[in-house]
Image 1 (spheres, rainbow, N blue to C red):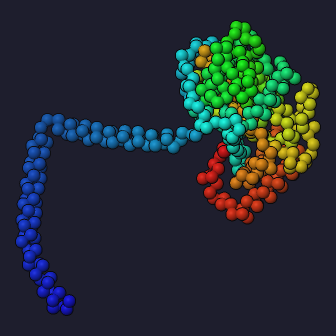
Image 2 (cartoon, one colour; image 1 turned 60 degrees about the horizontal axis):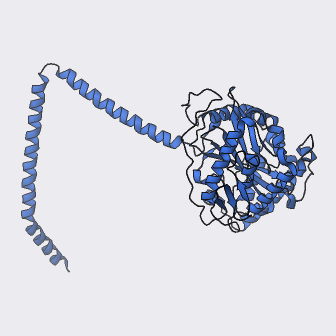
Image 3 (cartoon, one colour; image 1 turned 135 degrees about the horizontal axis):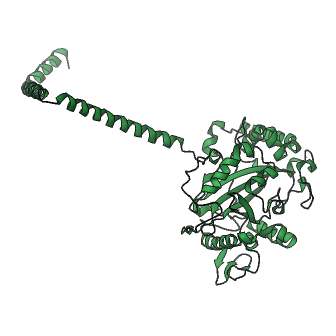
Amino acid sequence: MDSDSLRQSLADLVTRSQPYIDHVNTHFQQSRHHCSSALKSAQKDLHTLSLKPYFQEVLFSSLLLLFLGFAISKYLSRRSTRQSEQIPSTPIVEKGSYRRETNTRQPGQWEPSSFQFPTPPPYPDWSIETTKPLPYRPFRYGPKYFVTMGLRNVDHHDWIELDNNYPRYHGDKARRIIERGSKCCYTAPEAYPAAVELLQELVSYLTARYPSLYQRTDKGIRNLWSGEHLDTTSDPLPEDPMQTCARLTQDDLAIMIEKPDGQYYLLAGAILLAGFWRLEDKVGMPLSEIHTSGDVPQYKEKLEKGMMNFFRRLKPEELVARNNYFLQVDEDLAWSKSIGSEDSDGISWNTAEQDRAIQHHYFRSERQTLRRLPKSGGVVFTIRTYFHPVTEVAQEPYVPGRLASAVRSWGDDVSRYKGKAKYQNVLLKYLDDMHQKQVENGLQLEEEDEVRKYPF
């Protein structure tokens, strides 16, 4: 199309559009006239109103209410946003901020609660042959090591974890019950009702959660794998209830009972696979003495007050968990021979062999849960130990680099407590080498949080 034709087409378009343009302009003029009239009318009404008594007071009050409403709305919005940002993924009980105290009961007294622990669904596709242990890796990068309880809320369905290591744990427990008996399993008379309650809770939970392993019977519970039939209903029971509890789980178990002095005492336990501590040394002790006698680093400064508050306020409806980790330089799940004989008077890392080969290094992690029994008020610890060769764990992406950084971050007190001097040379060199190999093979360090975020 040439320029003359284009100009003619545009002129025709303008001509055809003119009536519509005139129509719109007419409406615009009318609208402007109406707006002007409305504004003049409003000004006249406002002037008339201003001549009325108390007009200024009413106007001032209305503006003040409007301002206060806006300010309160902004404050509540900011507060809600700030609280949502500050709620931690794990309760910080060391600072006493886990919850407000709503219970006015006297120490050592407990009014039975009507709470019933929820019946769990069956564990998805659980198998004693194929269900692998969960990969807890609860260590952080340095350079700072934080001494905290590190509690987190847990779904009631996940109270007890069983996996394909069950046969080994079950066998080790059965053997140690025969060999060591009351040294590892004990229930004080004042804790007996709580121990029986725990046994009943386990029977209800396990038969629902792991129906391919456990079946409820008229007399108690049947282990479908081992063929055992455990009596949990007779009065009196045929064995210590804590010992029966131990036969049902891969966990060690302990019950703390509050006395009138407000302290919680270890008065019942089945501690068969602890590795580094003995029930006979701790039974009867209050919570604080258990930790100070074991030289737990910074317990008095950072843990004691928050822990006492947590125990006092724990409700039957709540289930919390925490994880820790250690390094061990021998292969025994039940008792680490490196720190001395289980029957010796003095046990310590001083007896451990220096710089054993990496094949003797084991990664030991505990998953502990805490809950209060609703009828007796006793606080139950479950202590599930996960035990793997370091050479196996270090094959996992990101693990050797993060574990090496974590071990290097331990202060002197934590290093002594965990026996670092006995294995650090061999362990850290191996972890550094494994980390370097992973990096050379294309490990994307910046993607770690997406692949394996703490604490797993």
